[in-house]
Length: 415
Image (cartoon, rainbow, N blue to C red):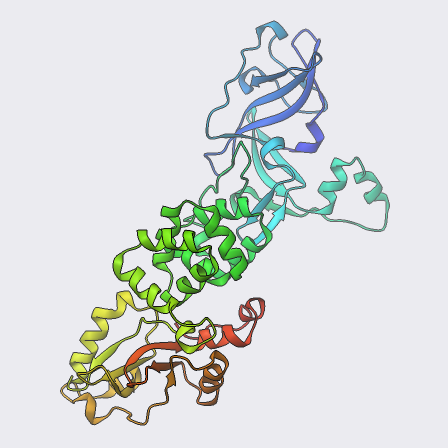
């Protein structure tokens, strides 16, 4: 099996069957629809400054010279297919996602493997040695005391990302990228240009895209939403929790936010519009109106059934809130106590009535302090009539006291 680096063959002379120079190798075209893409054609820069795509079937091999099986006048120009890419133009020096390392890497060189008369792309060189090889300085590195090792990533552990005219889409985003934690994808997003970030976020399904956006900075959220189609923005925002969606929309230009809200499902937009009415730094501004509330005359079994029915629409269920017929908050129950109760037991018999609450207009820092003081996972928000309007979760409290970059370092034990 012959191994070649792309830098070893680019700009090498291409010779026809009669030994006449056709030009220099400018690029290698591979089919990107297989785990290890097969070389399909070579792009040759001719002596008269034209480019010519030569099909691999007319190429003898690769090396310091690249011989053809035919004469120059017998070359059949190759038509590049939609799923095929140019290694130099589309991959070299571009950023790729190392799926195993969950990081963004720069391609310094590419490795090809030859067997049975064909070549395949098998790996990406992301190391300094690959860069030195391209500069013709690899021997200098060998003779120095640096002892630089090659740093390769197998091609099947790479997803390519490029948003130029010859866009290379993520090859298998739903299989690999969506297995990342949203915070890992957000870290990658932070290193990309807006165009490449859009390319990545648009390759994810709506739920994964929403979870990722919630982990990114407000500035990056705005730039991504502003750059995408309104319909796509609507799909993603509908998957976000109402409080996070409201925070994002509040940072958008008013006309853009209204256009998105008008296209959202009525129930979704109503929840978000309600949250947008409160100041950003108030309890109402940071709360979510997704919570589970049941009536005081419910039994434990009825409450469990209510939780099952509501679970699909509620992101987090830390506590069960008990309300009277006029929707005033009268009690709270932990999930543990609910599960340990007898099925026929009324909630009013074992609920906690000494409830810690905050008002809609309370300052967000006071809310965070109260959550920390009482070791709560969520804190109910009530209006002046003690009616339950929403809850502030512990992650919202972390958002208040820690910047986004530090928040990601705090493990999410709940949710």
